[in-house]
Length: 528
Ligand code: ZN
Image (cartoon, rainbow, N blue to C red):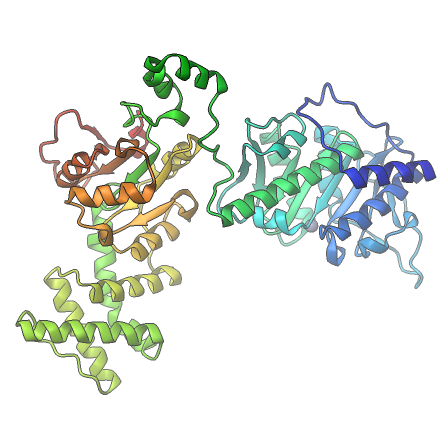
């Protein structure tokens, strides 16, 4: 037993990493005996506890030994687990050997994870299965709260995952949690079937199940996966998407070709999206996609028939309910200032009083309705509308209506390393809300930024030049803009952007387009 402990200590100290390999070529550590496995699980539990993976009796570990499964019980502090506390099960998960009774004479309970562990033994021929409640794992499931996969690429530690390499990326399926752990079994089995390359399954807001062909590899897989989860979460905090390959990954052979043959630039650039910098065909391999909203990714009717009537109808109850809040106090001050200005200019006859709640609210409502009737777009009006919509989205009364092709298109662009931005006349706050609370789910993760008319009018070429500077592209032709407005197309094209016209049902017929501008009817056609 001492020699086994020595092996653990070496392994725990150095945390070995494997190189990329397939399960058919890797060395398998011989199965421990049942007593060795009991000892090993107790030791691993202490280590996992110290890493924060199994605090509060959560998580679990099981190891195959002498063709049986040795498994930690539930409800026992992992850091105090003893070899005598372990269950021994047969291949079907039936108990062969119960652990010793507690000091008070009560029986220990088999972990609820047991059917889940058995799934990995049966479906993957695992030699050990581990379940951690690591903070990194649960946060990784929330990078995109609607995603069914965790993705990461271009990180050295991916090589530690069996069958994976640095560039190929690594995907871990995410299943939704259930009230009881054993009820997860079906979902976990479905994920194991769907993702034959994955050696782990994440459970949203819960943790991760990881396995390997033997206990050593199960443990190193668990460590590598946890490292990748932590890296992706931290990269997200830095504004970096860990699922997208960085730009500078240029094939060294291509650099040599470029250096020796300057004429090769365009050919290489059009072959390889990563070096599209000087390409003349950037409208097909853009670095950034910028999208208009109304008539492009959202039906015109959503803004006209849903958003505006909502703001009109809900201004009064909103002001009434939030009257004393700091935000509403400021909104009212701004409206009163604008109304006073309009009164002086003779463009409005509404006065917003500064006494008595009822009178103030009614004055604001009359002014807002008048401004909306005149289609005025003052900052005061836009601010208040934005706040009314926000409450509507949060309460579930409003939902952003987007064309269904947007999500698969965003996914496809993101896989190609293309960043997507929005440029629309609605305020950035209002844009953000549409994509947060949309019929396609929360799309914030797939959008890198929002621009509104604070960057300038959508009809002015210099607004597009400003935005190109903000996006940090070397050349404006690296941006591809999609809109249903021909005037905007001309302005963006004048600024050197690539442009595509969008024709959607319910849009006004497109005016005559500049020569060579393509028309698309779905975002999936954008890069064709
Ligand atoms: Zn759990």
